[in-house]
Length: 558
Image 1 (cartoon, rainbow, N blue to C red):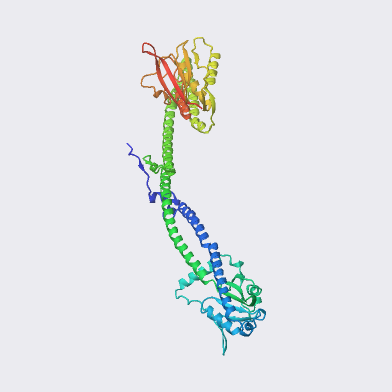
Image 2 (cartoon, rainbow, N blue to C red):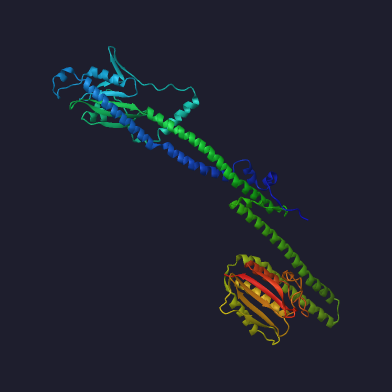
């Protein structure tokens, strides 16, 4: 007795030997896991990249800085207009004659700017630069003040990270659209468009990019006393604070991205595991079934998952069971065929051996008749076996079409009655309700074969002059056809066995070997392939005695 079925589980040795791809995937991420990780992380990376771009935020910071520069420049210009006018020209009382006092203007500029990051330059109406907060003029000459960069960190890794950050993120906003910032020597108002515009009474703002990839923001305003423009004040500042603000925002986004990536990766691996592991189990189980390692090995039951993999598991289990049943049927069919063919071959061999020794012409004629009967029986048996073996393939390939059972039964009855030559032969009686069609979806030739087999079976058991009844009834979703005869009926306890292959219980007096015993078996197979069923029963008379046999076929309506 076979042990109860057990589920196939992962056996590294067996699976690796049978499937090299399983061995390759066992110790690393499977392709499906990698794809799930890539898709999930790619979507997160696209969102992350969009957040890092921050172009609108960067533009607003620049606008705010420029507006602050403009306000600061106007305040400085007001202070210069009040405190840096030449006293002699101011005392004249005329607007057109007022001039800027250069040295007081330089001192006011240095005091107002101080040591901050803003740089102030002052240009006379002729365009000559007369003051620069980065240049100190003393008895020994002019000294230019340079803002030094912060001291470099001793951490090489941090320095490399900072360099990579500057190289990448300084190019995220479209800095190629900015004008380059240059400081010619000597500097004049003509070198700066905003200063030139300030000398004609306009307030101007502009953003340029320096060679160190820093942005230089500039705002220029006219210095006016009353309505006379006595100078142009240009304030510039590098985007150090803006860049630092952008850096902090991006670092926060990077931290959030790292956390989200870790969570996404863990969830993706978990999700992939819930998909990959059961699929791998199913693959290994299917491979072991393919190698035929015993019928007690079945596909793992994952139907509790209640998802597509559970459905796949159930489908594979059903398919495997169907394959085993098909193999069992093929084995039984082969054994039955060998048994049925062996009988006429044995008889034929015995007759051939005997006919060689018999000299009596009458005995020889009798033996030759037996040989001819055995040959015909073999021919009929092989034809029926061939038809039965082709049946499965034909039923699986053929296309179904609407079949009118009422019309088919009428044609079968008409054909039988037209070819009936013996008046004592059984006749057919058809009973179909008015308007009933009994349309089903099926293969017409095979459905007709079912009813021809049933009618032929009923004829062989009917008494001379008997009546074979055919009745059709339509129900909500089923068409029922009954074929009944007035013969001796069916043996009790054999109502299921008569549908077995090569069942050989025939009417008394019928010549042995006339039928192969495959007709009812083939009929049951055809009906089952159409989604129906066939059963047999005995008819009873009023006195309770058997009055004949009845075969009932149920088929789904189209």
